Length: 84
Image 1 (cartoon, helix red, strand yellow):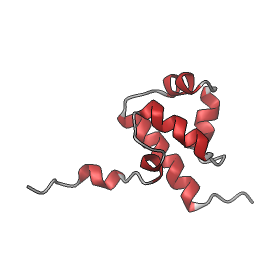
Image 2 (tube, helix red, strand yellow; image 1 turned 90 degrees about the vertical axis):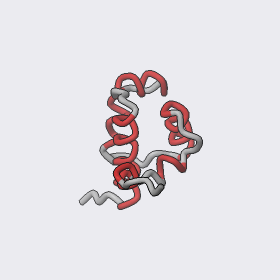
Image 3 (cartoon, one colour; image 1 turned 180 degrees about the horizontal axis):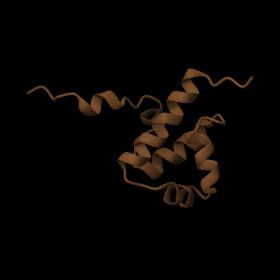
């Protein structure tokens, strides 16, 4: 049986969340990456492991500083109150 690693699931979730937070649809991101929408979908569903080079390209499309911003993305931080 096919088993997904926790890291692959986390990265897949982060790709989808960041894309949605940027208000980008899959077609737009796929076009910017020069790939098919179905390829992006496989990444977002954790069906294939996303290589570092691909994460670097995704980071550029998302306007992030580094691919690590995708890997280390923590959606919980979005909902925490900022300290004054």
